View 1 (cartoon, rainbow, N blue to C red):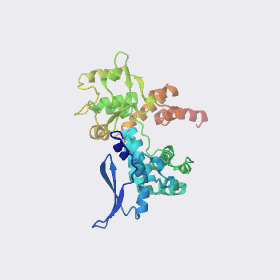
View 2: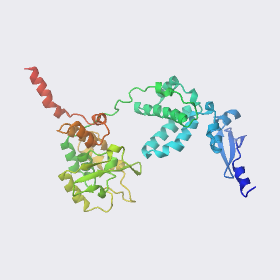
View 3: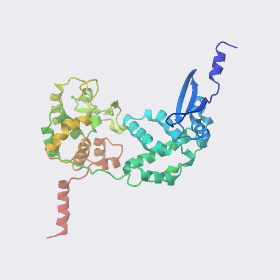
View 4: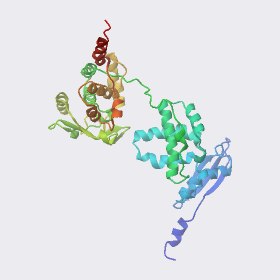
Length: 374
């Protein structure tokens, strides 16, 4: 036998590990599952209250045993539970997503899906049961829609991973009402209101608001701007990254990465602001090579001024909605508005902004005049 052959065969021996019930003084007995990984003994504890019988816990461990032996195809379809799928989804799929999406989806999985569906076999999920569960969730319509979408993805993944037969996903039959309905009313500001706010703010906060309003940027794009993104010769700025949830990432969509023209008034402000720059970032954090946290910045430095001015309740995204309203009331064609907003489709652009009352007035007056009400 060649040297090392024995060890290689030993490492390939199929193992299920050992399983025993451990009594606890407080009555919270556990199952102790012990197994080896690269020659080292590992153990995992599972509550007996969750798995009353040895058969139940063995069925739950089928996925782990198969993964341990590199043979996930050994799992019987009926033994694949939603909890198994959620765990694998968190481990294999979520890391590839943006941190903001990753945090949101992991929260839905751990707080809502796993507590209810953990031990339910994937093949036993039924539309009526899902519909009834969704109605009990203490969430908004959009969050309920997210939970439904995530549950559907778990079953889609199970079929993709070849853990269950490829069939019609039962979650397709479940609908959540009100998902597309906007929960918060869009607040639009006039250019005069934004100008008043900018004048009342100190730098760098006034510059952040000015950039967001003049270019209609998302705040994660404004905060991620670097001086190298601005070409003062051609008077353009390149939007190519975003700062969100403590990470610098690519922009939201392919269409979001684009060049935008800089107006002379904004250019003048940026040239002056650059004289005090100490970092490659336009708005650097006080420590570390990273941008500032815009949520705290808004709360501490901008919101108090908004309240002092008696302005309506607004947030960073208000400037993007207002920007769409301003360009929509001008001469810009819809296709130009889409490109200025850096959207991938016209319907997405149409969902932003709206027409302000004063911009409606001449059109309403024209209709009334034609009706000859006097």
